[in-house]
Figure 1 (cartoon, rainbow, N blue to C red):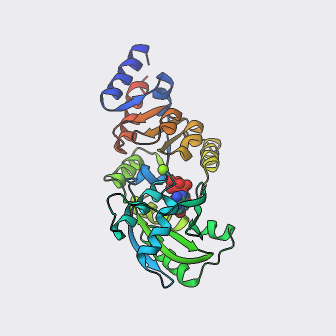
Figure 2 (cartoon, rainbow, N blue to C red):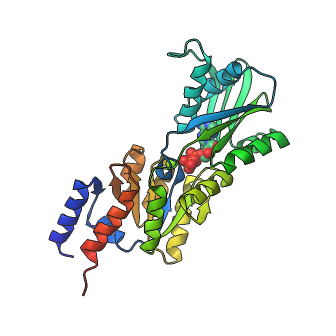
Figure 3 (tube, protein in one colour):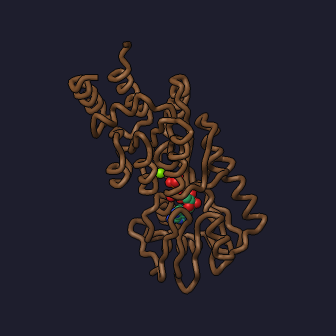
Length: 298
Ligand code: ADP
Ligand code: MG
């Protein structure tokens, strides 16, 4: 393609809300034959909401949520925000709740949070966080988790003083049109994969809903990038689509990193292309534009 064609392509992209950071990014996109999608905030809306609570001990929901919110209010994670938001419903001071002070707050990336609240040790997050802290998971809790994950929801285990006291189910629905985008990519001979930090059960359920066959779950940020490199070593030209800090190593590793416009600044900086409208359709717009610019009939 001539420099003029590249300029035109980049301009057309910009006018459609697809910000292409350079000629190289536009060029690489036409060779893409594999797209790696992050789950939360990329395939899903990214606005998770608590949809149910199952208590395993005799405890008032208000007290349970007070401890949970006091721990999570210190975290920036979307799941934490959902929990704090939901916890407000149980309070008289709903508008501007005063949560009890949390001591020794600790955020364990990709796993959950820990804090001391009202002299109780609160540890909440996924199964591996419980295992690492030697907190036993009862058969009841296991069953609730499996049910939750089967419905494509994320189950958060809440342990108080080293006992799993309840399980929260959090739902983050698919973005509208996600299924169609995956099916169009397939028709363009582009393979789609999910790589997520979430658990295998939820990841598999989301994959089934969206029509993706290959799933990598419980992946740490470095492992997301490693998966991208593995696909490249297998001969794929890889686009990574993500929104989070935890996606940035993979966005950099990919042949084309695409950030969701509504995502974190760090992801946007790491990417080659920014999907300003945060639409998944624009993954196709970007590849199409590149194909039109670079695959002339010779
Ligand atoms: P993703 O890749 O889907 O954006 P993360 O890597 O951020 O997910 O988190 C992985 C998992 O760790 C979550 O699904 C959740 O089970 C647990 N987790 C992470 N942060 C928190 C938190 N603040 N509170 C509770 N659980 C959390
Ligand atoms: Mg994400």
